[in-house]
Image 1 (cartoon, helix red, strand yellow):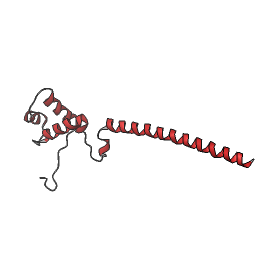
Image 2: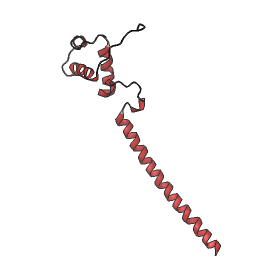
Image 3: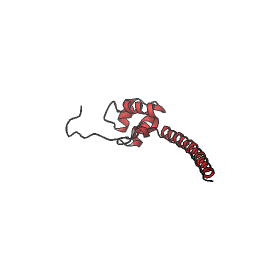
Length: 114
């Protein structure tokens, strides 16, 4: 539990990536990594590993202040591409309807005027 006025230690993205690499590739234990990198919180590695397993390396970034829809940039990009394609199709259909409507009534009006 945090105490009023307590300062929290922050770790750079590089330290987090190095800690994950040591555990995944070289098989170091959490305790060895904490001692080697000077990580004070015993459970910090468990939290980083959970984020890494769920979101990959992007999960290790500090996301405070970012919208959750941008967490997975590839998924967000694909949804924007699908939305763009759908809007293009809608515009194409709308333009066809406008062309049909504009040519139809004009020809009727012109024939009625004569």
